[in-house]
Image 1 (spheres, rainbow, N blue to C red):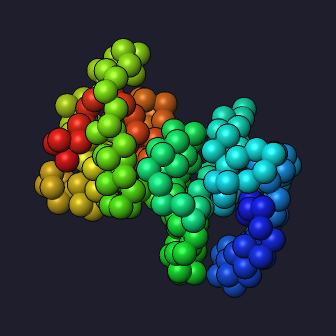
Image 2 (cartoon, rainbow, N blue to C red):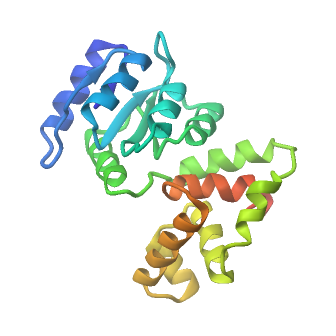
Length: 217
């Protein structure tokens, strides 16, 4: 489903994605409120969400969609504004990925597939923005979140730290001398133990708890 207040953007993305094998555009929303309503009615696998929309902004719409009971839709945030606060707030709201509107059709389709598969679109550039944002935060890690880290094994904590730095399963496997499937299993257990949706949420969690600090990345 595509949520954007500009009709040409909605139609353009519909044409681009509709031409991709295995991708079907099931609906279009004209603003944030419409996006929340249509997400509930259509149950899309992925919602492409614009940041700046009337009635209800994309960040709050993302929060409502991902926070709904039995929510299954993944949100891929689209924006023309390459600004740190949008990246941070969108991920905090529950987005699984962040993509600029000037991305190529191939990149857009790949992003949709990655997010639909249950992975997170956490590119190195997004990681750098996260690091930059967290480096400006002076508050101490929140105790409840910090306590949850204790439920992880030493290896899981190590894997989570590398996930937060934007490494893929293959890269983590190479770094830790593990099989890629073993890393995938570790990541799955981390998400279950911490009650997190995907790798993006795991990365935000790692920074917020102080497990990963900008100076060490």
